[in-house]
Length: 316
Image 1 (cartoon, one colour):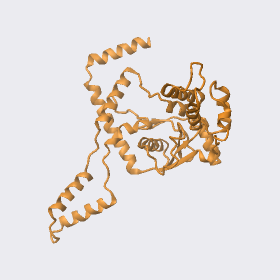
Image 2: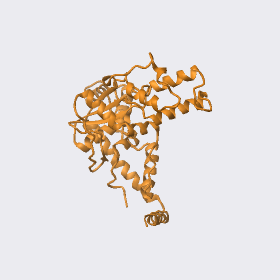
Image 3: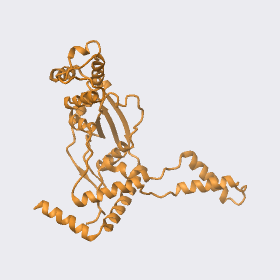
Image 4: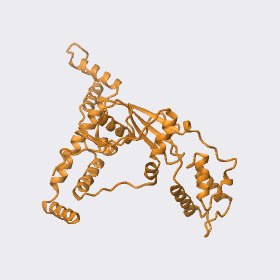
């Protein structure tokens, strides 16, 4: 067993990409070229000590090597052991739960706004470096995120803030050989169970419910109204939630609740293929594989045999 051909999932790329050297800016490139030209010209004025230091620093940055940060190494070490014992430590969080439960609704909402039928992609692809399944691949890659709440919806953002999502789009574009992609945030109603969990969390923090589950006072009611309005965006969803709730009443929202139109519940960020970024991604994957092999070969043989024995017993 080795990791020479290990394929990374696009969503996991962010864990290994922090060691990519930052490229010089256009101004820095111009400064470097200008100083090199002067330095190599015997007829030019001799560079000052400060200019020599600047030149040396720019050359060092220009030739910086790809590295694995300590954080990346820890992630890869954990990944090696997960592969050996055939286990995974998938993150569980309310944000991911909503995303999974509401993925189809989010895609449908964006379809309505786009006035184009978008279908959930069911194809999984592999290439030499990656293994993944994107949300949508119709003419471009689309990664659709159901925002946890109105508070987390990036309504005022102009660029993608999460670097992990950028590398994820890069990975999917490489798998499907497409040059354009979109990161799409959608506000959809939070599932009842998750919203009720939020109300219970409010009660634990602020003691807003009595022993029978009724709201104690107006301040508790206001907290619940605010929370529900940050998670429910359609009148249909509000009515359904209140009908199924034992402590939240529909009449509380009269004159307060505003239904948000679909076109205001979608935020789209465009992202294009970049040859430089694609090369960086593959350079880091090669480096990561090499380190994973180093970790593997550093594990004592008797421990490897113990792992193989345990796996064979569990499979029997």
